[in-house]
Amino acid sequence: MKRVLTIAGSDCSGGAGIQADLKTMSAHGVFGMSVIVSVVAENTSRVLDIQDVSPDMIEKQIDAIYEDIGTDAVKVGMLSTPQCMEAVAKKLEEYAPENVVVDPVMYAKNGCPLMQPSSVAAFIELILPKAFLLTPNLPEAERICSMTIQTPDEMREAARRIHQMGCPNVLIKGGHLDGDALDILYDGTGFHSYTSKRIPTKHTHGTGCTLSSAIASNLGLGLPIDQAVQRAKKYVTTAIEHAPGLGKGNGPLHHFYELYHK
Image 1 (tube, rainbow, N blue to C red):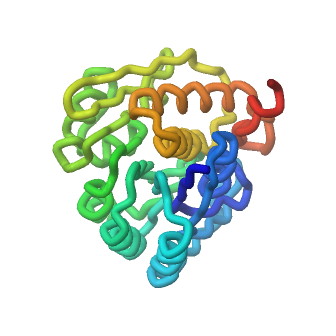
Image 2: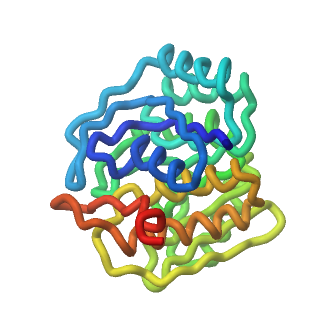
Image 3: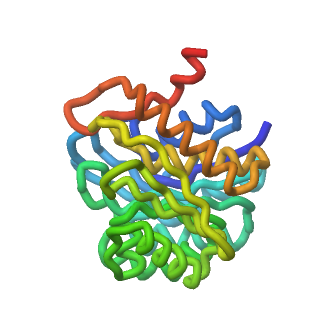
C-alpha cells in the first residue's frame, strides 16, 4: 500500500485540513498519515481560534513517520507562522521525500486568515523551494507573486514567476474567475489546462485541501503529474457536485461519494 503524509492544520468540523486530507487519501486507496501543525477551532461559517503546535513537536511527529513507515508522497497545507515553516522545512531537507505537494493555505473559505501576513516571505524562502508542486488559488498566487491575476494569461505568468522562485511545477487554480473552473499547470516547459463546469453551490469548504491531497495520493500511486492533476480535479468536481449540504456556511464536500454510489 502506498503511503501519503499530510502536514497541516486540524479542522474540528471535518471539512478541511487534516480531516479532509485523510478522507481524500482513504478514498484513493493509500495509507494516510498526519502531522498536525495547528489546531483550528472552525466550522463552515467562521474561524473561532487557532493554537499552533510547538516547532519541537512538529519535528518529532515528522521524525516518528520517517523512522518507521516512510512516505511515497507528502502534502503540506496550513503553516501559520515562520516557526512552523522552519520546523517543516528542516525536516523536508533532512528526509528529502518525493512528491511534495504544497498548498499555500492563507485563508479559510469564509475569508478568515490562516497564515500570518508577515509569514508570506518566510513561506517563499523556506517552503516553496521544497515543493515538487505548488497549488495556489488566485488570491494566494497574487500574494506570492505581488501581481493581480484576472485572466488565464495572467495565471500563466504567475505560474512562470513561481517556477522561477524555485518550484518545478505550479498549478494555478482559477476558481475565483468567472465562467468554467479553469486550472493551469506549468511544468517548466509547457502548460496543461484543466477545465470543468462550474457547479452553482456554496458548499466548497476544504476544496483546496482536498485537491492537493488527491494530487499527492495520485503521485504516490505512480501517476505522472499531468494525469495526477487531471484525476484529482475530476475527484474534487464529483465531491463538490454531491456535497451533503451540511452547516450554515460554506459546507464540506462528499469525499466518499464514488465509493458509496458505485
